[in-house]
Image (cartoon, rainbow, N blue to C red; front, side, top):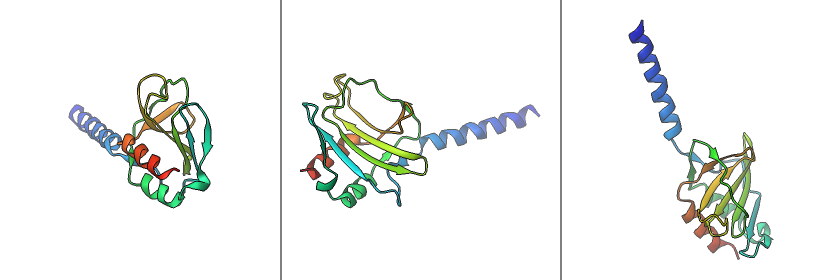
Amino acid sequence: MKKKRLIILAAVLAAAAVYCAVPRAIVHDGYPIGYVECRGEDGSLRDVTEQVDLDAVQDLAAQYSRSAVPRPFPKIEGFDGTIQLVTSDHHGVLHIFLSNGEAARNGKPFYVAYRGNGLCYPIHDGEKLMETLREMIP
């Protein structure tokens, strides 16, 4: 009986490890990106939704993935210098924040998908995504 419990526990732990290790898509088919904004280094907000090709932004974001394990949203002092994409999925609204770190005033970059609940999901290669988006935004 003890051996059977250990095998079941090991199987559950292995399944949890695999679940947490598999990256998730940032955006999903059928849930388009509906809003794109940039904040300048001076804090000025620009809604660039009408100035960018949202389909191209969607296709670009679909190439990137996020962690499956949530982390606390980073403590930041401002969103200057960030790019924000807003989309949704079957869980609700999803904000994608991309910042080089200097604008966050804490010296650490952050590239996260955030649901507004205090938890975020780090984006893999977020710096590369941000650089490509900066080239697309006029």
